[in-house]
Image (cartoon, rainbow, N blue to C red):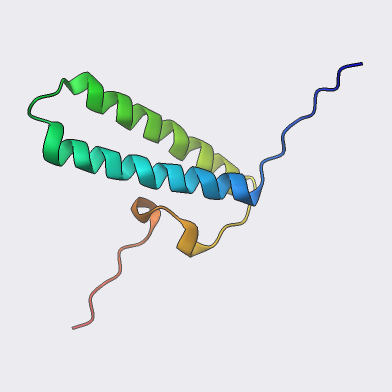
Length: 85
């Protein structure tokens, strides 16, 4: 008899999603800086689409109540810190 187990999202899966989103943020920044002139717009769009899908999944997991530490968030999710004058 074959059992089909439903995967329950965990804190560690959310952490992995956050790390992957941060990686895609860096890939997009690198693309914008170094490869934009010689590449097609479809290449950047593909990166952005994948990143947006990951973000949607991560936000759904967080809304479902999976806990995470603020330090585990991708840099693009963090609140900007104001410089002290």
